[in-house]
Amino acid sequence: ESIQNAIKQAGTVVGQLKGVTQTLSDAESDVASGDLYSWTYNTLRRFKSQYPVAIPEIGHPEVTAVDLFPSFPFKQVKFTVNGTAYYHDLGKFIADLENTYPHIRVVNLQIQPGDSSGGAEKLSFRMEIIALVKTTT
View 1 (cartoon, rainbow, N blue to C red):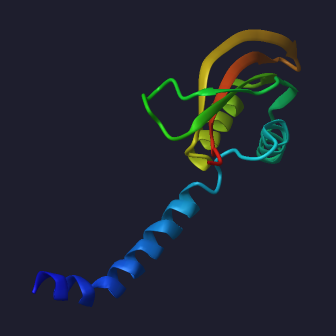
View 2: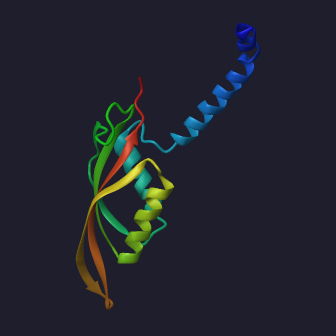
View 3: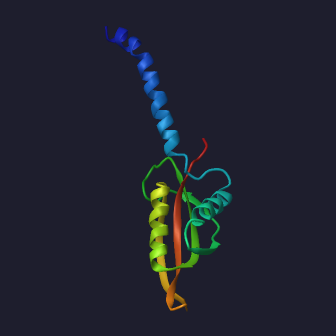
């Protein structure tokens, strides 16, 4: 009887598998892949265009094993970003970046006073960004 029931439910299981596979594919849509330097540059350039944050320098990405979890099926890419922004603008930029791209994290944020212009003071910042990389097997 259990074999008969398993055979009857095969169509349902196949449908569920397709649904879960599509959900996983959608969740991985923003994971880095392909030419990582190009992905890094283009992703930040597109995202930054909405914010008054100056990012003149994006470091070369380094691919390593994920150091947050052992035996994780992804690799990670880490790159350094330098720039200037006002305090509020930088905070909004970082918050929106991490909320828009759930597979990206900002780490090692360093903020220093920048040049004063127009009575308001901009900050100079340096941060590392870590993104998951989809590996092909």
